[in-house]
Image 1 (spheres, helix red, strand yellow):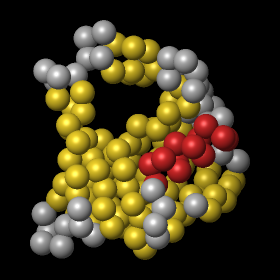
Image 2 (spheres, rainbow, N blue to C red):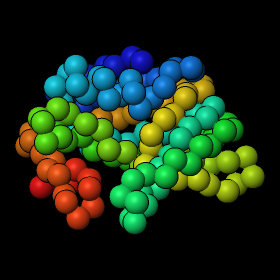
Image 3 (spheres, one colour):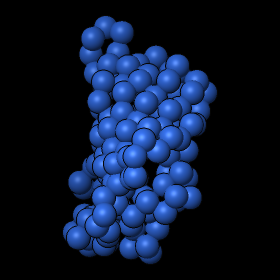
Amino acid sequence: MRARELERGTWALVFDTGEEAFSLLSGWVRDQVVTAARLTAIGAFERAVVGYFDWERKDYLRIPVDEQVEVLSLVGDVALDPDGAPVVHAHAVLGKRDGSTAGGHLLEGHVRPTLEVMLIESPAHLRKRHDPETGLALIE
């Protein structure tokens, strides 16, 4: 992954073939101590895993996407978890060869050939808290 600050708080992050985007992006926001941001991305994955939140189980159902897909839309945010660590929350819509799509909470994205992320930091801190009804950490 290559990161370039375009102007203060605005970053272009470019991922290359073979990189797992979600884990690298998560590590980068922790290393940079990004406390609040929004992000968008386009590109392609050779395979991915998205999640669907199962309300009854209060957990994500993993949906593997085991084919080359276009990242039609990837949007998300960065906020501080209840322990004060930056976390990425992102959703993706992935386009398949036949024109159908798969989408959900991005859990894994294995890049091929590229993923181009634009991340814009916010001057305000966003903090998440544990929500007992959903079992999720939600922005306050």
